[in-house]
Image 1 (spheres, chains in turn blue, green):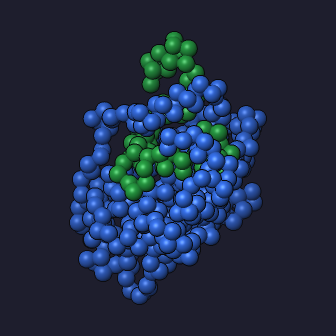
Image 2 (cartoon, rainbow over the protein chains, first blue to last red):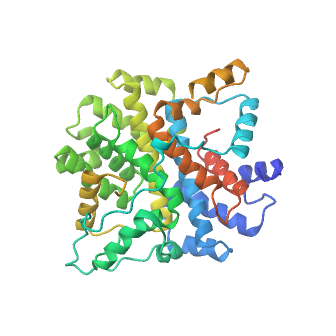
Image 3 (spheres, chains in turn orange, red):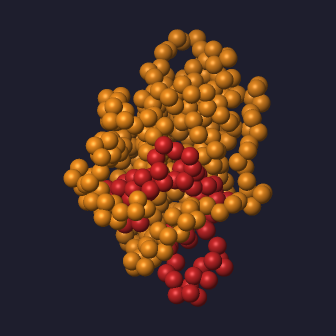
Amino acid sequence: MLGHTAKVQAVLKDYRTAPITEAEKALFQFLEKVNRQSHQISQVDVDQARRAGWTDEALYDAIGVCAQFNYYNRWIDASGVQDMPAIGYQMSGHRLATEGYARPLAPENDHSHPHAPGADRYELPPTERKVTMEPMFLRDVEEREGGGQYAELIRQTRAAGAPVSQIFHLFAFKPAMTDHLSYFTQELMRGASPLSPGLRELIAAFTSHQNQCLYCANSHAAAAGRLLGSRALVQAVLDNYRASALSPAEKALFGFIERVTFRSWEIRRGDVDQVRQAGWSDEALYDALTVCALFSFYNRWVHAAGVHVMPPEWHEVSGKRLAERGYVLR
Amino acid sequence: MGPQFAAMEAAGVPVPQILYLFAFKPRATDHLSRYTQELMRGPSPLAPGMRELIAAFTSKRNQCPF
């Protein structure tokens, strides 16, 4: 794609010795950390990449791509998508380079221009306690007005004098892109599935907890608690799912999810057969591993952009919103 | 995606199995495709080629050959 196959190969082999610029080396060094240790990213890492010459928008996009392929990698590994002969990669590379990733949607599925949310429909976080949030690592993302449904929500929240959940900025920065992410997330988390929305939220909280993403774990634990009717069960699963009150079949499912989160490349047909024998259909497994893969994306996106954990009562408000209204603002 | 798979098979082209993952729940994955399209090809300070390189880099580090 860069017109230099040898250069691409050199970067994949070892970016530090590849014939690329110092700025590009700094970017790959940053992305290596986003990929494998996103919970340890700090302002220092982001500033270092910025000093190499990258704008916040460039870093936002680079983080987005790296996080998104953490989604795809797990999706592919855990569902057993097989390696192809070289001709297959040549053809798919050509297809991606010329046609890209999507065809136009049928009009009934095209939600790319959702209505702005009604001004009176959102419950805002409690404001009694004065808490100052640390700024995000990507300041431009937080400071730009942004557009679409989330920019509107940010304006309403500020107008009410309430604190803004920083993940809203990640959505508002590029709404032409993130509106599709919202709809995908909504369909995955609330659409037709053998897994209840509560169980899907629990998988999201569990994955985020394993990835040490407190922001996501707290919000989705709150949503799961509401949808399942037991906050104690949710906490027990996060603490140690093996000792929780989950059924043996559910424990087998969470054991599988744990592997998808940490070592998806080691998953083999036998692993999937084992969890299927616990009673799960292929559709249930597809939905479960897709939720896990999606939150492996969100956790990195949130960590590396510097979305900070909030006081517990704010996460409760987010959890309530997710449980009652879902992921698309309308 | 059914006819597309049939056409690929008729032409002797291997069907990348990831297409089956998209085809299983298109109500969800149509949005995933569009999100990915915008992320990988939409306006950005990073060229599409650079974004593909980041994708390949991430996948290589995660030992995912795709």
